[in-house]
Length: 358
Image 1 (cartoon, rainbow, N blue to C red):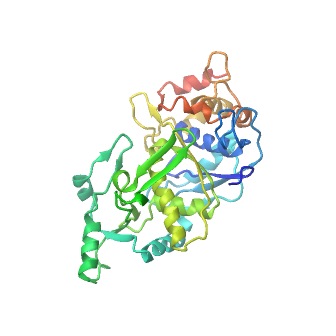
Image 2: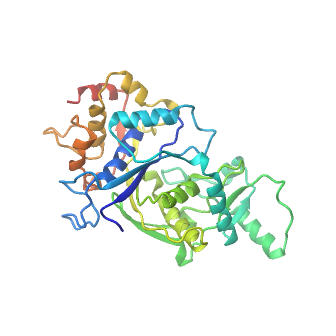
Image 3: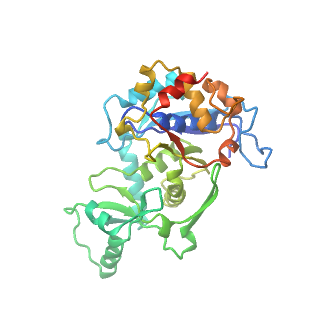
């Protein structure tokens, strides 16, 4: 792995104005790729960024994840770019729009179909609600394999009936739970060593929805590889999805869709919740950047607060300190988060908190 030039990405969904939780995650991604990555940190952690980090050795890309056009809000991409520039979080090159890459996703699905890994699913949303239950606290729903069994039965019976007129999604068949290939492990820079059984803990996810839209899992994996991304930062609710993504990368390589998928360094962040324990959401206009900027709060106050959420505590009292993104860079280390992986909480007093930061 190239330790002198990492490639990261901002990957926002243009479903509304960014809120403080989005900024916190994008700022962490920018810090990760722009820090000077030592081969070995003082705690023996290979590839960590430590005190004394320097800028200029990373490449940050911008991908607008608008593959689900039904969620896209007009001008939201422009708001996102304007807010990133206001915060001093720069990227290289032109933004990539997923809505312009549908042919690439179709080719990826076709490659997986040629390997007999894809099957049609006729379950409706109401069917899935009735037969499935969220797993743990991340809301992940594991598909019970209803149509996978149907597809296997059709195949064994030689049933070649035409399914073209029947509305269906496309799912990928992960290895059976007792297969050694079902076990996927990785080391996360915040949550440490993680291991998931794809069949038991992830299941057969959708690659293409019944309305023709490609899933986050497929589009994210394909774009990260084709864009050369090898440094991924996102919320801890996607920890188990990372196991799936690693496996998907391997299957697409085996299919010949690409020749090589270099390893990726992953970091998953504690989530940002309201004081009532509800995830921040753009659709609820939760503490969004429009409100923050209209309140005459400086970008250094927002960056200082997000740095504090990431464990950067330069103040004598341990509270947030106003700083630019460049000023935060030499203070950044993933070690700041490892000892405190609990989700963060913000409440309606955030504007007052930001105004008080000096």
